[in-house]
Image (cartoon, rainbow, N blue to C red; front, side):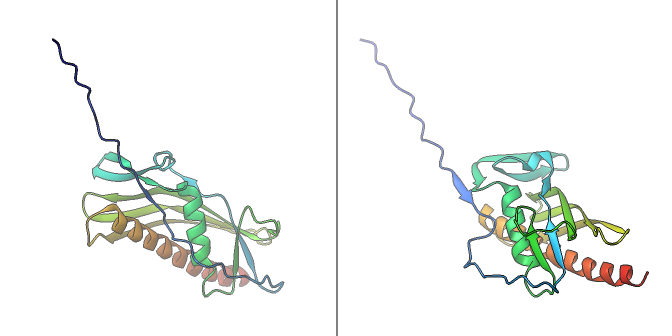
Length: 188
């Protein structure tokens, strides 16, 4: 008698991560005297346009986890996180390109993210560039950015929370540049 045995493999447990946990929605009053900035669709490097969370494991090698994935598109998550950070403690109103009350005379902000990942060197990094364009002024601002933070704990959960902090640093940089840009362009 020949016995048959079936290969039984345990299904892969998938962990889903969000970049920013939901918070209560704060109603933002639009004021006519407040300068408005439209945040355009976030542009991502090709390797970031997938659900798997990326980790750099060598100078030129990336690892993509099949088990640890984003719960939503990274493009959408980054846009939401940046809008939340940009609209805190500012006199400028930031809105999404999807907002129905975005006007054509608003300053526009375009962001291209070239890297946004953890590394096996216990760091998270984010780099890219952003552009500010004001249709009223002839001058355009283009600025590269690079931010990194140290990972103090193991695991994707900590890495994701540190990546969220990278976006807060980017938002602060954008606000600072926009303030300086407005002063510079208004003097000419």
